[in-house]
Length: 115
DNA sequence: GAACTGACTGTAA
DNA sequence: ATTACAGCCAGTT
Image 1 (tube, rainbow, N blue to C red):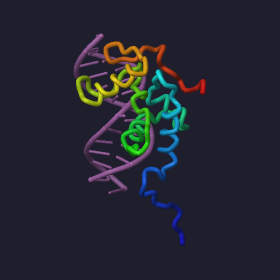
Image 2 (image 1 turned 180 degrees about the vertical axis):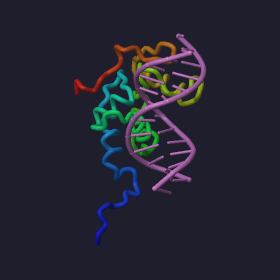
Image 3 (image 1 turned 120 degrees about the horizontal axis):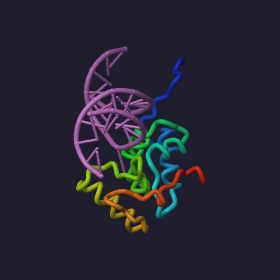
Image 4 (image 1 turned 60 degrees about the vertical axis):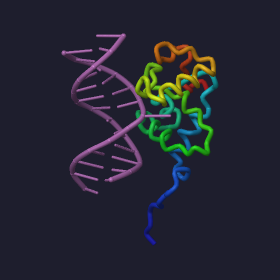
């Protein structure tokens, strides 16, 4: 049977998504990382968008600290005023992250390279 | 297989 | 500082 490729119907069967989720889980509490950094740490440099896709497709069964993932410059990618934006800001703040106009200060940012 | 879309990023106006 | 636009990559239609 020349079925060179299998069909992972479930997201949890995707190693790429798992890798990204794993990296997100490894983000220390009280810190934040950018999509690009997460993707790079997961082994996919230059695929920041894929990191976002992985988070969006992440099963709710996982207790994933998605709120620790922000856009470049520590900026929250969600539209300001939206529910997601507020929730992420709220969660970050709950972890001790001082948000500045919806932005995470560089000090709270981690490159995940030290892990 | 082409076209569209998106939890991105960097540069320009 | 803010807004617009283009580039990039992978998944979805």
